[in-house]
Image: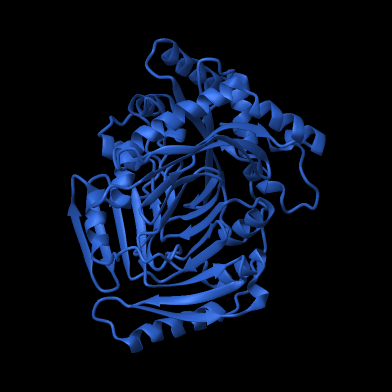
Length: 472
């Protein structure tokens, strides 16, 4: 049963004001904000939290805590979710459900791969929260709804009470925290530049030997930051708008994503995935922009990279889709973002009867665009060549609706605030004809928005030389 209250506040039609409206909730445990296509979702105060680390599973409600070990944590989540799932309702929007992340390290558990890189974060492999009330805003229609879901054993009065309590909390004004980067040092990489170039050459050796065709390789950057992360997210989300901008506050970390990449969208049993392969920086003028995007569109290397990953994703979806339903409506198209151009492919298929998003996750996780091909061998090489475990980076974040509507993005261009430290990773696809120096420079281009953070307190923009990071 669904109860809705329409809020018609024209002052909320601009995304910046919506970000301000979320501010009172932003420090609450498990507060979240999601931008997805033409709508936004935000909420707090979940009724259930599911976490797993390795084989250890924790399920927490407002009054209970259950801990156990499981060989298949994702299956435990699927079983738990089934208690609340509904048939698809032909409503294309989130109508309550789970919001959270599945870290890249979950893939190590799913595939039982050996651990070689240093584990530097205690964050769970899975951390999702179940929400029975939330705010849904349609940017195209300039309308918003507070929505509460009726849980088992709840009566109508309790449902409307949830709406009212959320309304009061949502309307409460919060003082705006200033951006304070006075003591913030430049980001430091977990690689010296020459070591990064050597690792790329090692990856190319594996390609020459026939182990792999392509591997995604990355470096991690960190700096100390003890301030409130939400004002930083506000600034970044406005200056660098992203299709899947996301904010998620847990008791141990804050996730701030400017991801441009969709991992999975499922609606009415139809699946879509949109891998990215191929990048160029934005130019300093319209003429430079045109030259760079034409260069990317005509690049045989980037086209080949994308085609490899499309084939991999088709194979992954083939495990869970009806025979003959998988197709590629877009083999290659160009997307424009504030700092880069990307090549993107689109693969679609129809989910087999009896399966759901958790089955798709298990069949396709982690994404092919951020591992390589063949996937398992590429993951083994990533574990060998990258000095630290990826944790959340290149995992996924988004929502899984009780009404079977789900949308998950790849966690790239994502800041993590944890233990008074800001960190992020950037990487790229390595193939036989990759130039190590160019691949290194591409990581700096992808991280430009974050490298500029220490200088954002100043009025002027930095030039490219000022955001090149320090080395450890």
